[in-house]
Length: 253
Length: 253
DNA sequence: GGCCCGAGTTGATTTCAGTCAATCGCCCGA
DNA sequence: TCGGGCGATTGACTGAAATCAACTCGGGCC
Image (tube, rainbow over all chains, first blue to last red):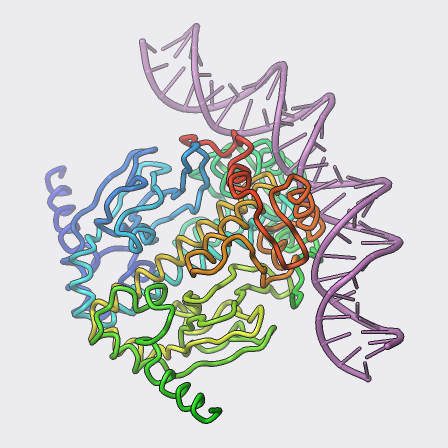
């Protein structure tokens, strides 16, 4: 039984993309099955990271793009004085490492928030396959574009004046992403700490903590540390656009 | 004389990239001259936008990438209630329009901050050339990666708790970009309004105005509306890291 | 099991930035 | 040339979030 499972895993590993449950969420979306086999050959292997384990560090040479297979990551930049800004939280199916394309070395860092499994796409191989499979090239561009758009969402979130709006948008967006993964979008178990959330949103930890409490008092959430249950998704959604912020209105400058 | 200039412009138009002064700053960086000629064939033409003129709007079908040739643009998203978040200011040599790759339509908007000249790279043609010139494909990826990194800088700026730090970083970064364009990095003439700056940084206009005044009092700047002269670049640089923000320090969550 | 540490929460206080309001002055167009 | 309007500045005030501080709780480790 045990050895049987192990053999199964090996096969799984060998035909990673074709059989991967993430399917449409990952790079292979919209790729024909023949091309999919080609893509399979570029996936070197899976790496497992423990909580806090580094996938890449600032300055590391660019070797590969990485797909989160299970678990979750955070990416962040850290300046010379040690200040951190978290750039994103990455759930299964999401690809990280695009920051290294420009200079052939990473200019940010990626770390596991929990025990995570990662697919590695060595860029040399990927580039080779991409040059032979135009559909994959387009798909790769689409994926980077998604990354750009995701960062736009982050900027919009941070641009809000009301901290409560920021947190509401964050939680709603996280819930939506879990739901797209066919996971529970109501009973979340946040993989990141309050410190991470605060940093991600540009707030103080205490503020985030207080906001969780306030949302609980309002009956929007049920909060127990990392376990967060959304009781009133409608209210949460309305809190995302609450205050009319005249500063932000369009103004041909 | 007049018709002579016109003929010259036409030739210029025809051999745009090869003769463009932007050279290394734009897409052609690191491309051989033969490939450069190939790239030239993909540049449809130049468009001129007046101040406030739209390059593309939210929902527009994806037709091309655009290079700022002269002038400057702002890109922004606008939600259903009209709230705007400015995503970036774009100077000559910079490419915009990557947001549309994911869904084949734009999910943001681009508008000229002043009279601007834009090179249009129809994506269908670009893709064709890219498939024949692998170096160009790599270069295109590098350019998108630069866009991602630029957005990281924006996020880091917005994440700062002190508004003064945000503005200092903004000004320093803008000065650096102008200098890279071989323009004056000391005597800036800001193409964007105070409203734009405020929105970009997630601040109120009044705060931005007060900060300009404060920086002037401190002897860092000389401010006259859009004309800003950096008197003490060293001080400006030090203001970029002023407050030690313990919240932001790295913290394994 | 008990201890210890760090994440998380809550409270008190401060401060900085947002808001409201008034005014200036530049630019553009009648 | 003269208004008008908007961008920009400045002031007064308010309020929300940061800061400082104390404490709780839970999990991991011995």
